[in-house]
Image (cartoon, rainbow, N blue to C red):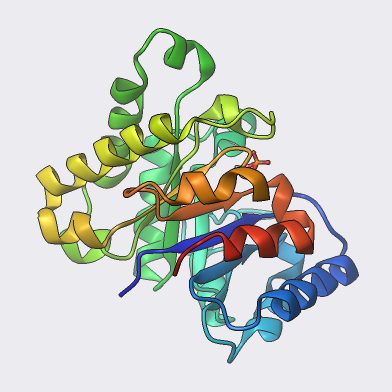
Length: 252
Ligand code: PEP
C-alpha cells in the first residue's frame, strides 16, 4: 500500500459555501489522485465535506480536533465516536497551534490518540520543534520526546493506523520551509525511532508527512526525499489551484 498523502489543514478558514466550493474545485482539478488526499475542514463543515468526497477514490476528510472523553458534560466539544459515525476517517491531533493556544501536551494528546483509535479514526499526529530548539541543535531530542510520549504506549496494530506529521513550528505559516535535507533527516530519525520501538515492517509502512509552508514551488523537492511521504498543508490548501498542484507533486 502506498504511504503517500497530501492533507490540507484549513484551520478556522472558509464559510460552509466556500468550503464546499474548494473541495469541488480541487476534485475537478485533480480527478482521481495517485495519492491519498485529505481535507481537514472546520467542525461545522465535516458532514457536508464527507458527503462531497464519499465514494470518490483516495479522498477523505479529517477533523482538526476532538475531545479525549467519549461523552459527557464537555460543552462545545466533539467526541471521536461522533466523528466516526458520520464517516470521518482522520483527525489531526497535536497541532502546534493547539499545543500553544489550548495548552495541549503529549500526555493529553496520547489520550486523544487512544480515544480516536478506539473509535476507528486514524490520527494525524503532529510533532515539531520551535525555532530556539532548532538553533540550539536539539531538534531530535525534542521531537523524539514528543513521539515517545504520544505514541510509545500504542501497540503495533494501533501504530499502523497513525500518520505522523513532522511540522517544525518555525516553518508553519511563516513562509520559511525546512530544507529538503532538514526534512529528510528528521523523517528518517522518526522512522528509525518507530522501527526500534515497533519493528522494521511497521516503520516501513508508516506515513510521515512534512508540514510547514509547503507550496507548489517547493513540494516536488520535499516530496522526493525518501522518507517524506507527502505534506500537511495549511495556507496553500485554501487555494484550489495551489493545493491541486501540491497533490500532483507526489509521484504516486
Ligand atoms: C499547518 O498549519 O499545519 C501548516 C503546515 O501550515 P502552513 O502550510 O501554512 O505553514
